[in-house]
Image (cartoon, rainbow, N blue to C red; front, top):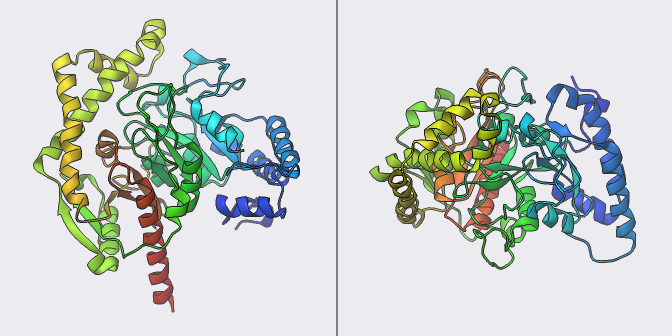
Amino acid sequence: METKSEISPIQGVSACSLKKRLASGELSSSELCEKLLAYLARHEPELQSFVWLKPEYVMAEAEKKDEYRKTGAPLGILHGLPVAMKDIIDTAGIPTENGTALDSGRVPNKDASVVSLLKAAGAIILGKTASTELAFMKPAKTRNPVNPAHTPGGSSAGSAVAVAAKLTPLALGTQTAGSVIRPASYCGAYGFKPSFRRIPRSGILTQSPTLDTVGMFAMAVEDLALLGDAIFDHDPEDETTAPMPPPELSQICQSPVPVKPTLAFLDLPYMDQACSETHAALEELEALLGEQAFRASLPESFSQGLAARECIHFAEMAKCYRHYQSRAGETLSDELKEALEQGMKISAFEYLTALDWIKVLTAGLEELFARCDALVTPAAPSFAPKDLETTGNPIFNSLWTLCGTPAVTLPLFEAENGMPMGIQLVGPRGGDARLLRTARWLEHTIRKTESIVGE
């Protein structure tokens, strides 16, 4: 049983609540960070979610934020809040080693665009979190905070663990297949992979330009929206981003739904890979929603989606990681070497044909989204496997990364062994705010139902 000293200072406290407490003067950034660092000192050695963490740096930044607040000058929306950063995101003057010994000691002289945006919003970079080797499949040393015998997932393992373990209220990761949604589900955090093109990627390790997406972790849907408001932006250095109006994620997310959302529960071609407890959780949720839910199937063409995504991923990774392979190919993990070799064998015809599938599949989703507010699928085939040599299977995430649609996972269920299981909601491309509002509505609906049943 936890003693008071063992409870995180942000246990049960959202980032939005911390923001209000900081604004009111009830709490200072220095007090918040001091308490977090003390909690980190006790629990991080076991979890190993951070690869760079300097308390003196964090406290110096927190004191600067407190002093600046006293000036009465305008503040950013994250002023004084700590945010952890996956260690493939460049941070000026702070090591960014990309999960590989090949980049040991690498210290960038420029922040990634997303880090610049966070600093402009007043955030404090709490530390750099563990990534799998070059953000691929070789597990990091990070341990699952619920049960260390189970994988925390990957590749954004450290960020998922740090948030789920209440070491930080907010964290960033990246997803090229399922590297945000899956570890969030395994660890019991909220994870959000936004629409493609919404968050700039300059200054971040490039694995697959067509697929790489910055994602985020938090412990509430509203917190995901808050963090997204700070980093959804256009970046001239990232040609995939485009000028856009302010996202207003928080405003829309926290507004009442105009009408009760309708959710489509997808019968995917690979649903047989989901475990019995995952099926049972989906059936329970569908029954609870009643008329607000219906069953749906994707067109047969979607069966080609997984192969197309892997083709694009491996071909682009073979090109982007060529310098790693040439420098020290034999020191790379077997998983990465095999993927790179496979990528080098992909022909231009195969690659360009795979790219064509993005428009085909995105068009195929339009008809389905015309009938519902969001799609419901498993966030992962099961709870986190009891296997530290794997990061798990991204099969239920890959299609949405390929199509560039936003996806959010909610830690709504628990397996019989006590491990968390997330439910994934998918929205139309560009419908990020609406998706978060639907996710918030769903969570509140479930809590209300549970309260009634409990009475």
